[in-house]
Image (cartoon, rainbow, N blue to C red; front, side):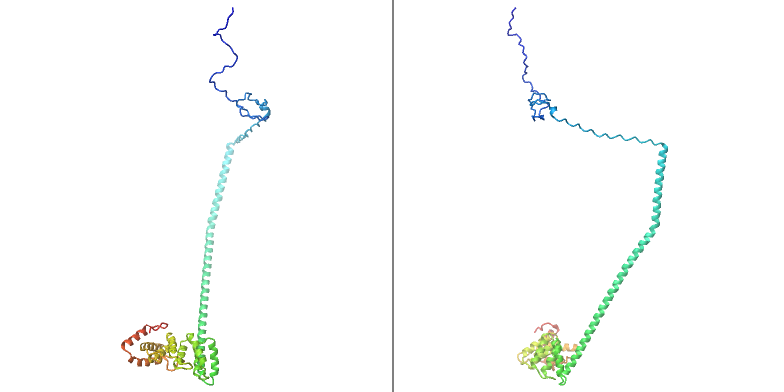
Length: 366
């Protein structure tokens, strides 16, 4: 019986059945492995077995060097079991520890007793050292103080000795100058005295300049030398010697060895008077009371100056031996008595006020 396959007949096939929407095969675990022979990197789509290189078909394990085995951790041997110690041994060990502790305690107690015995000695030694140190410091301080006092006493003694020596030298010089003043007026001793005076004047002795100038101006004991006389008097006056200014002013007032100049005499008298010199005060007051030449009469100024000269004379009691004739402050009282009647009460009061207010070194205010 022939049988034909109809449309409903089953068709069998050996082809794999693909299911729609089936998931893709999972990638091989060897994906990304590099072959040691050909250096091929395995891809996800390679179908060769995981142990075989898809390129050269060699087994990976034949060409890859084997990995060294991981080192095992060192084994720590277990501690040996403690030996068995019996009761007797433990008792002996405890007794030994107790004996050692007792010995240590005795040692410490002995050290404490020794320290206690040595402590007073230590304190005594320390106190002695402190006392010695304080004593040395005190002794040094006292010694320094004594030496300082000795030095101060010596310096004071030296200063007193120098002062006494200076005073004696000044007294000797004054005594010698007085002798030279007398000798210069004598014809027999004048030339020698002038030589000595000139030597002293050249060394800067102002008194010698004054004596030499007046001697050469007046020609007492030696010939007159007006030019030298004016030079020495001018030098002494310029150096601040008030009496030399008075003598030089007197020369210009009287025309002694120089041309008579009342104005120049006034300037020189003022120089001496402002220093408080009695002869300078009197000479300027006398000049203003008389009104010589171009100076003019100035009664208030004259009264003030004569009053000051009178006061200065009362303090000094004696005029210098080298004051010009009749120019000592001794004459101030008489001149003042003669001047006062010619002045008014107001003028006299003003003159006294000026005299009371004036001090040496100040301008006169007139």
